[in-house]
Image 1 (cartoon, rainbow, N blue to C red):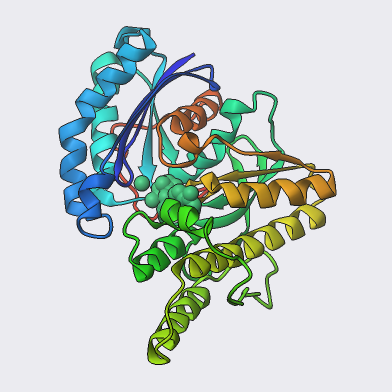
Image 2 (cartoon, helix red, strand yellow):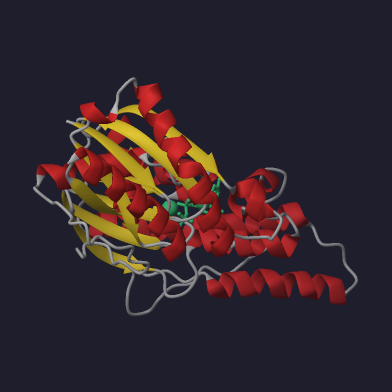
Length: 337
Ligand code: ATP
Ligand code: MG
Ligand code: FE
């Protein structure tokens, strides 16, 4: 089974050819980061226009690199939500056009399901059930993967997503967009225990997260330094902030591992490429005798290979979308439209 997958939910135009769900023949990503950097974040209108400019070229490159043509394909997979509506529409329109012209089945995929499925690519023996900590730019979910395509969200953020917190704190320190990798780099020069930032605990759900208080604490700390005329140690702030995020993510994930007696914990999403987070989860899993799975960094951030993997399992289950498939900006995980 050979799938062409397309991803355009945010600021990456991506296409990939995936064989039998887990073998990636090509993984082409055209990132718009340099463009959005100028504005300190993703500008939706610019993202849509850039996707339109790039999509044909990216798809062609994915096919060429894989050494296949459209005639070799079994189906087309595409992200149809959640994400920026104008950005999603470009991928959905492209996928529909190819599927219609080549009389191929069309399989719409949930972007976060894609992030989770990225774990299957480099862990060929990984199979559900397992727990997955999804930490991306727009989501922070603790998910029970019960089966292929069957998800139960145990916990979620009440406010900011983990990646969003990284981006906002990076902006406050003056590091620019995207904040995650920059905070990680600066944190290496700082002391993670220098500043006692809060680790929020949600009283009525041990698996839920909250990061907006942490973000405010960082801002207050910086203002406090300025008022007192003290120098702001940015590296200590970055390290202490990052440690606070990691502590909370690990605490809640391991609570779920214990409560559900899970034997495997996976991580997914852009923040999962953070080396310090990976080490912390690895250590916690080792202590509990639990298997730890993670995609390599390039498969953590947005890409189409993960969409190809997710689409494959949906395709195998018989999921097919019609020509009325539309972008659904607020699509919920586990929901089919
Ligand atoms: P979503 O997947 O929720 O729709 P998205 O697609 O924009 O959102 P991803 O591409 O999965 O998000 O991840 C991007 C996020 O990951 C950004 O917030 C970015 O700052 C963060 N990120 C990337 N690399 C790192 C890192 N090394 N450390 C921490 N955060 C990181
Ligand atoms: Mg992105
Ligand atoms: Fe994403």
